[in-house]
Length: 96
Image 1 (cartoon, one colour):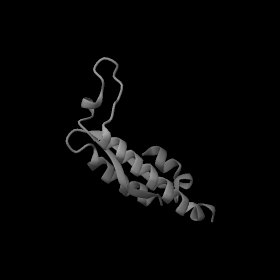
Image 2 (cartoon, rainbow, N blue to C red):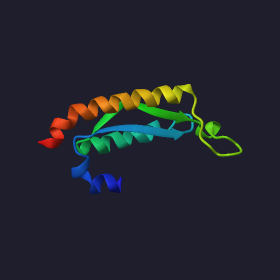
Image 3 (cartoon, one colour):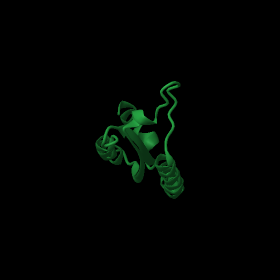
Image 4 (cartoon, helix red, strand yellow):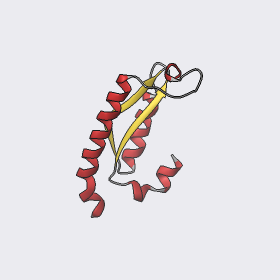
């Protein structure tokens, strides 16, 4: 959060997407708190997100490589598409 506050001018009028992980809630409660912070810094939090519940089950036991399933792939694609749309839409506010 310190980096967000320190660079508040640079972050203003930019879209924010979240990727969270955890247990059953997949870190979504933390995302809700972070959304309040970024909104106060004039950032636009997106409703689309990538939530990874029980993230340890996506780690390969021998290599430790993260291997998401189709749900995370689809969520990431949706998030990136929306991030591109909002970034383009907010461009005029960043140049003002």
